[in-house]
Image (cartoon, rainbow, N blue to C red):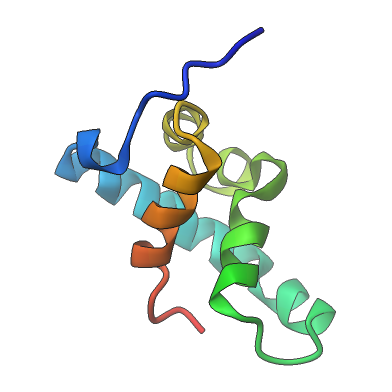
Amino acid sequence: MVKNLKLRVSDLSEEQVKMIQDAAQKTWSTIAADVYELCDGRPSQSEVIEFILDADRIAMYGCQEAQDLLHKMSWAQQKKLMKTLTQNWV
């Protein structure tokens, strides 16, 4: 199945961004301790983003609708959004 990867960060409504942010925050709250242990201390922002987005963790720990929106975006657009949303998390 070919996914539609045309959704861009600029296409998201404020409500959609908030939903993704909330889902990402829930995901990070769930996995943070394990990530800190795996990274032998403080992970980089790019590691945090990778762990949050990897393996559909947002759907598992956050919100399926947020995951569905992210799946409509390219990896570059997902990282761009998450870089903004996770600025002060580590």
